[in-house]
Length: 564
Image (cartoon, rainbow, N blue to C red; front, side, top):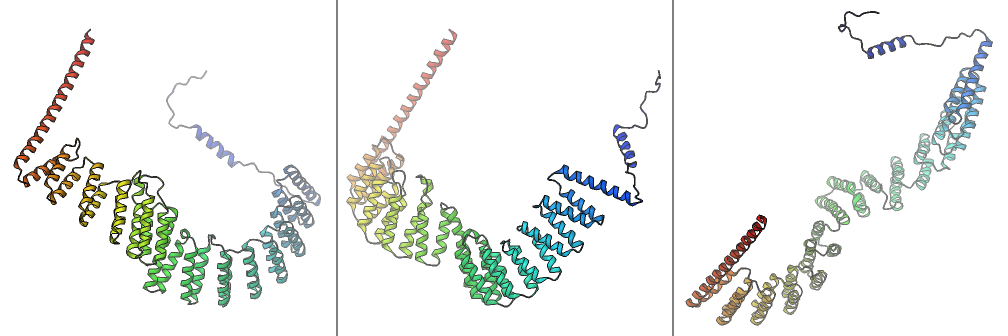
């Protein structure tokens, strides 16, 4: 047994990671390679080829449907052995096994072209495009081969066969470029006509128009754009690009008025939410070629489009309606302004709560004022006020402002009876302080004292606690030197059990007696007021004392129960 005498740590420490790393480095340095074979005679070559072919055949049998790479490697290996017949046979077996795999057809045809078997390559291409006509790469390669060989007629026939399958746009454009390379302008034009019939889109029309313009056919190019405008629907997402291209075409032709008309027509046709870029283009065009009025029109169209988008997507945004209507009022077109007002007031708030109606009601007010002041149409103004008053749910809330504006309108038309009817309905349906005050003021200006008295009576019946109403009623009687009436009103007022500002009413009563020289009455009123206040104070103190005593008695009983 070996005894370790020195158990201290070694100066050089080796970790397990270091051991594994060194082991791997030594393994990598000694890589095992297969022995190199040297073939010296024909029999050894045949043995090698037989073994390799057996290996490939076994791989093909084992892998079933996933044989793409195996077939390709097998055929390429046979090609390296310079046995083209065997390689061709393998390619045939491959395309027969996986006829829908276009990559095999491509490699097969490239094999034939690489070995300069052009007729065989044509045969392969023709079989491929017949079997897979929707694979564009096969057509491109086939056409490219024929064109490189200088066989233009055959390439054209291939394109015509391809077009019968109605391929995508790029295929049509490749055919057109092919014809242009050989300066066949009339054939390219005929192809463009077929192209836009199969693919009626903005890109096809703009390319056709650009082709005509580059060949100096301005009238034909304009006709292409006009045809596109007629054929394409309004909901086409790229319609904006068509109008921009059309306008720029006219601009290059120095037809500025035509370009301006195109921009305006486009702004009217395209939905407002998708015309932002068109507005920017139109504004830039006007800044470049237009006068001050044209620039202002362009800015106005842009604003109109923005407002239209806002009110369409958010019809309850009444501020947007105000801005939009204000913009249209600057142009003075009555039908347009009325249409906007009708559209705006049709967006009634969803809930019968006053907070939602506070902005909406100003649409009606502005509408009525516009009809009265700008349009000078009295009948329409009256209709607007009537419809507004019928729309408001007065049993839940009302607006004194609209009642007063309607009454003031009738007064301006010298229709006092109509104004009285409106204010009377207001008092009956939705009485408010402002309505009473304004109605009384109107009757007082007309000198109808009896009506004023009746209105004050209605006012006090509706609001008996209003010191303002009592004071004003008494002031009316004082202005008529009806001292006893005024004193009676004051007496009735101070006898009310509840008042909103009793100190002002008492002061007004005492000032009235002083103005009449009744110092004794004024003193009595003062003593009556102080006595009432004292009694109220005593009553409140007694109530407070009795409450405190009850609390003390309850606390005493609770403590006594606790001790027991």
